[in-house]
Image 1: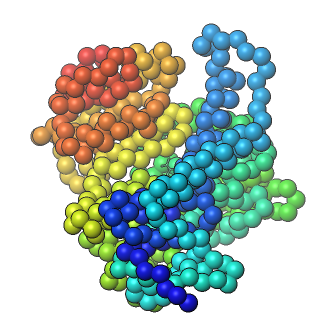
Image 2 (image 1 turned 180 degrees about the vertical axis):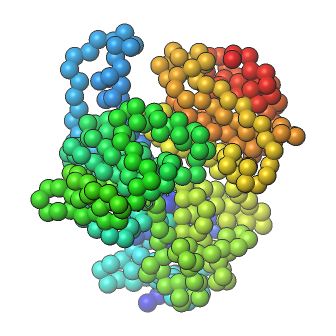
Length: 464
Ligand code: NAI
């Protein structure tokens, strides 16, 4: 078997891997990227962020037309939907975006290998295409960016009506009763999709709150809104089993309670790093207790010349965090500098309204003993939000009590996922509430609520 030599091999073409490959190519490196799926883009583009947002948009528009036309002075006839057409639109979007990455690979002269990459000693990777063919590759540097998959839950058997987010993105009919296990971002986003399309959704959550990692008060306000929308949220409920009964129904077992029967079950209890079959033992890498690859400075693993980024290492499992690490890891390798500011990684949950957050929460600041000031501003006092019919929610800014430096921003409201960009830039640049409050914001915009929250942190909001 002839061996092909590269400067860099990237294993995995998700938002971490494909971005790392492109950045290395931009820096003049000869790059190979191995991906086992025919489509590039990883979970995010194929079966995650992008298809879920496509379905969230279709179902949101249906919901608005069905329940809110009167409020806007609109008169429409009967409203219904075509689920197959929604799925087709989603698939077209996925095809379009994954195809775009193929074009970017061609433009950047990145060699793409279709197959499963496996280490065969230091500096060596074998690609197996599943049909018995093998290709041997060598490189001075190798980046593992193999991402994650839905975590298993003991007692829960995936199959039939019991599925993960991958299946829940492609169901061909709306379940009458849907049970969602886990009130994290995946459970609440996909739960919202199916609830808007008519499913009776019950979310079972182990903890006494929803949206782990999000500021507790903001998450609690979001909980109340979701409940008002008709989603049943059973907190403090531990699921210990679930299976398809083979008669068109599924049963979910909860600790200390009666079993629940549903048409479909979505398991969304977190994600597990993908390291099986990678041949890590051949290079001496051992994963930690949670299956993650340990890394040190510069995303270096314990094996010389081997790096790891994204969901397969520790930290939040978010596409843009992997993207940041991909760029920084490659820049560190080839330019000597490259950095990720983990305090400025935003998170967005695309429920309606959206929830977005960056920096530290009140709970974290209290734990760390940091004195802070809180500035809050409700969207019901924001002109643009009222005209949009999107006056639910608020902006909350946490600023250092002494210096005024913005430490965390948490938003519940329409377009929170876009508004958080300003807050992220503020944290990245070490901006104070005073500076943000003195920055002119266009009127009328939702972003004015961010400025007003900064003013509130200084005890001088204008519109409240
Ligand atoms: P998650 O870890 O955010 O939430 C899982 C939830 O399941 C937790 O609240 C946990 O307490 C609960 N749970 C665990 N075991 C349970 C049991 N036996 N019974 C009842 N509840 C149980 O995981 P999720 O939602 O699956 O998301 C995985 C990753 O993907 C997260 O890092 C998330 O942030 C990310 N993601 C990001 C999105 C975005 O950026 N918009 C969208 C979707 C996912």
